Image (cartoon, rainbow, N blue to C red; front, side, top):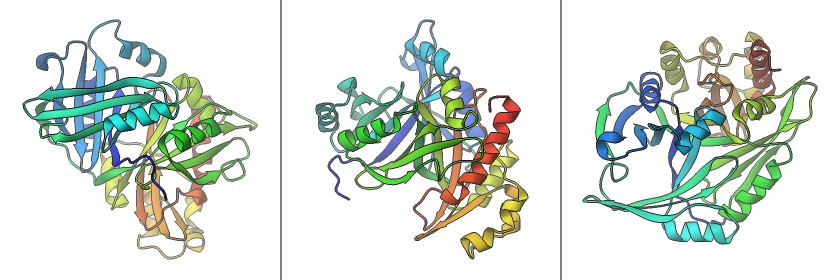
Length: 361
């Protein structure tokens, strides 16, 4: 795939939250992240606070306002806790920013530098759907802890085997999926890997459409969803209503041992979507031989799908906030490069059962 907009990888994901201290504790206690660094009143940051959590190649940043009237507080009032920034590590921040703007991106922050005795970090940002942004960041001249201003505040987590961010999924309004597909193609040089329509992702009651976008080097993947007409309110409609517009629906975290990862998450209280036991009766006929014990997969509720490259295992948490918005996917790839098309129907029916409990179907 030709790469006309070099992106090294997803550098970090920033969440805007109402209480960063409590969010950091939750992600450390449940997801097993190490709390690594802090930036706040004690370090000279006077209007907000940041906690950095790390597990292998996954970096999550939690930011909260500490004074009334902060713009973050206004965004939180609309969306609740949410993913605000999917940041990219790039070779050249200035080129990335100016080229993106030249191609039609809306600027969020022009290039600037943060400096201290450990060196310099270059940063710039552009707007994407809703109140979400992409930040470009380069630390090639920096040897400190994440960003200048951050201080070590280490609290050890119990790692659950998360290795990296596999993909991030965005939900957009009806009629906007192709708009943002074109945006990623034109601005960041992404390509449409896979498309799913309402024939692929539907039940008796609800459906959606989705297209998977990938960066030129294939390391960054962003499915984009929009609702499709159905008899009842789909999960995308529900998200848009409770979130207040377009935003990040879920983040997929890759593990090399999904059974161990899910067992640890369950032991710490994480709740997952469940499919009926009948899903597993025909599993071998559908996906062929797999390494894992199907009884164990059934007990844990882990789904399996196969493509031409291999197979994958996946499971989805219930929403992790009071609003039915953000959730997580745990994914284990055994060669497969796809996104679990064979599980869509069972997964949707599981989500519909949760919607019915919430009274939003």
